[in-house]
Amino acid sequence: MDRLSAMETFVSVLEAGSFSAAARRLNLGQPAVSKTIAQLEERLGVRLLLRSTRGLTPTEAGTAFYERAKRAIEEAHEADLAARGAGSGLHGTLRVCAAVTFARLHVLPYLGKFLEAHPGLNIDIVLDDRTINLVEEGIDVALRMGALTDSNLTARKIGECQRLILATPSYLEAHGIPSNPGELAQHQAVIFAQAGGGEHWAFKQGSSVQSVTVSGRVRVSAAEGMRAAVLAHLGIAMTSRWMFAPELASGEVLPLLEQWQLAPLDLWAVFPTGRLASAKARAFVDFVEGLMRQENS
Image (tube, rainbow, N blue to C red; front, side, top):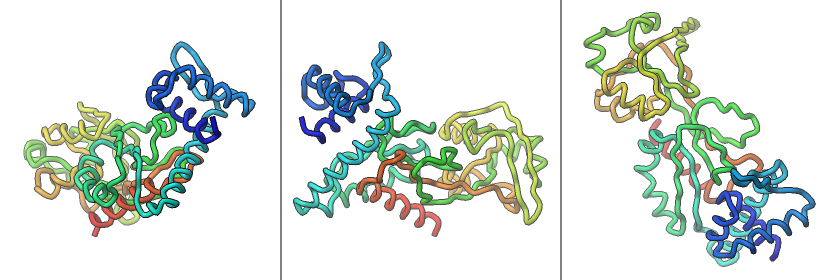
């Protein structure tokens, strides 16, 4: 088996999670897949996979090899397309990871335009509010919001959104409208238990900075839960304009304390560490960046 085929087999094993699953994906027998990985490890002189009753785990060398093998496979595929005169089109499958609510409101409704422009491309969208391991999940690009805690990530900022305080008219009618950040401590807060959320809200007005610790009986770990809680009139939330764009436009929720500013929320395109972004990943990121520009214009 040539080197590229061996790399494709290793990538399939790691992404599928087992030799048998990779064999089914590659339409090969499991012994052939196991033999290829053993020969690859022998040729490289390093162990790439650790085998246990819980499954397969890449070694440090295996993770590094996966990242470069994936890139080499993608570049070889793109070279084939270019040689055949198909370089202007995108083909294959693109795996994207994004937060559930953001993708539902701001990406999926417009995805048809992107697919229409690239008829040879399929998109596998993994919706998850958590920060998942891009290599383990076989993700080509992730859309992440807020501060990036891993300085080793390959990332590109593609958008920015205002954060604000909001609640439904029904909640405000029952509990009153806060006139300054300090009064939020007297209200029920819907607390978002993810990065960028929490009980400590920091406001700025000119040179004045005010931090408030809020409390509430409802705490949620996903944006969809926060939306549902706010729309059920359970409290006041600190959130991005992205998360409640339809309701802000309709008046179903109202922004509060607009004379005070909160730190904006950044949108990043994040690529697996050490891997050059493929042409299809770059095209998708450009598409989403264009969507963000349209929303902010």
